[in-house]
Amino acid sequence: MFLKFNLGEIPVVNFVGRVKYKRPWVHFERVSSEHIMFLIEDGDLYIEEEGVRYHLKEGDCLILESGKYHIGYKAATCDYYFIHFESNTLERVQEDDSAMDYLILNNKTVVFHDELPYSAHNIYIPKYISIKDSNVLYKLKNCFKSAVDNYYGSEDNYPVVCSSRLVEMLIIISRYIINEKKISYSKNISKTFFTAQELKKFLDTNSYRNITKELIEDKFDLNYDYLNRLLKKYYGFSIQQYSQMKKIEKAKEILMNNDIKMSVVGYLVGIDSPYYFSKLFKKHVGMSPMEYYKEVRLK
Image (cartoon, rainbow, N blue to C red; front, top):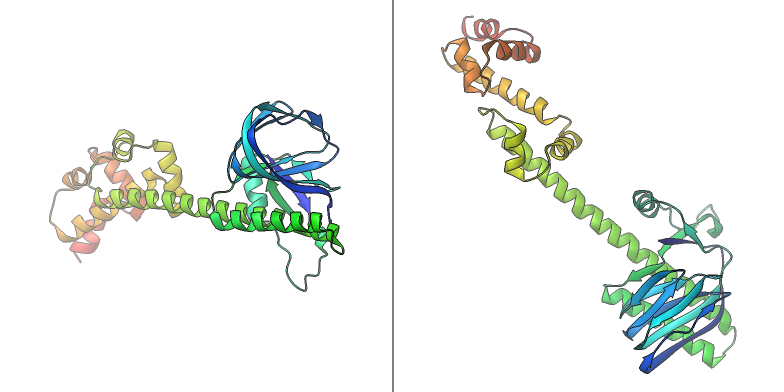
């Protein structure tokens, strides 16, 4: 679940702090008129919102939404930061995972001298996230500490500082998500490309064999249709098309360098039927195997 926040808004922070429950404690029941963001420093926090249960641990961040019922469902010791705020633009994004990935990875960011106002830009934040990067977690904690210090220090314009820290935290989380998705996408692309590359190599070096669906699946321990899609995605050919192309290339090499019966050539490239071999050869080369032989050997 993701939330969208518009960068043209300065949210109103009403309360910010840090609590340390050294004895097991259950979060109280309520329907808040504000959004509430938690960041866990240590321990466990068990909280349920609208029937969805969250078990928060160190490094976990959760945003409870305004107007939704929440309650603690288990006692535990916990040390956490919290911030209560009002926002006119924070809302749920009703998109599936693939659409959400596209939104996040292709979201236009604010730049200096941008012709568009800040209000033309949104960021996307997960409702619940576990921060695994220690540097990101350090930045979030520092923002919370600064907001807490300003809230209780009550220096000039401290509500604005608290609001600014909140926006900074949301941007930090947004950046973290973008980076994680880019890494995941890069790894996935690398893995699938490597698989397609290995499949291509296998077809290159086995042009003499009868390449069957079962042979491919047994070799790669992957579904044939999936492998077929990968090869077509990266090289533009299906497995059958590429295998046939390599067999014909090998057949042309044999005919060019050997005096051999036409019926044997097909067998040497894994095609048992002389008729099918001749038909396939003519389809790819534009002439029969015998015509090609005469063209390259009997000039």
